[in-house]
Amino acid sequence: KQEVTQIPAALSVPEGENLVLNCSFTDSAIYNLQWFRQDPGKGLTSLLLIQSSQREQTSGRLNASLDKSSGRSTLYIAASQPGDSATYLCAVPLGNDYKLSFGAGTTVTVRA
Amino acid sequence: NAGVTQTPKFQVLKTGQSMTLQCAQDMNHEYMSWYRQDPGMGLRLIHYSVGAGITDQGEVPNGYNVSRSTTEDFPLRLLSAAPSQTSVYFCASSYADGVKANSPLHFGNGTRLTVT
Image 1 (cartoon, each protein chain N blue to C red):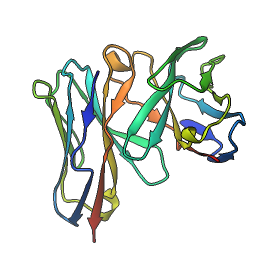
Image 2 (image 1 turned 45 degrees about the vertical axis):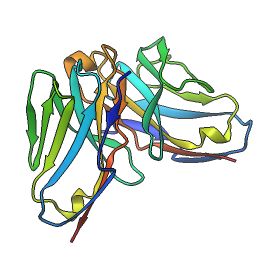
Image 3 (image 1 turned 90 degrees about the vertical axis):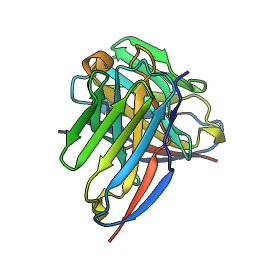
């Protein structure tokens, strides 16, 4: 069974600091890994999807890396802003089916 | 673009009552799914569908029914509500070959359900 872990559960940083969010998974046979953002009272928004053949994916200030062999992914957010405050979740497919296994998320607070 | 639309946004039920959570998407996605989100537990898959007329169970299907008569709609039915079903429910959609096609999942804004 695929288990996805995100540590820490919560993180508070001053504005301008770089954020590093971690995601680990137990089964390395994955097609891809997705990072999502969830604002309070809202649904999840897909931020980045890294294919298994890729080592990293970038979008603006966001960069996600993937190391399948070690079962880890890291989401970097450069020069954090108060608007980056949200919960960030990672998810991987369960086997060949499009059924995602989610981590519990890291709640980020960026202090102005 | 409406994307994935869920109704209602909030609902309070008494134990034993039944109700249907609605989900509709306008992106012509073959794949649709229902998740529940509970504090500290992440999201857990309830049911999913890879196309009209096809449904299957996820991790936590007990107490829930689904059907998929059209590509656009995927309602979730609670047969006899229990306090353990108090949660936030999310509907999500993607292309059916989402895994291999590396297609991201699109979520609705959720339905917050309380069962007393």
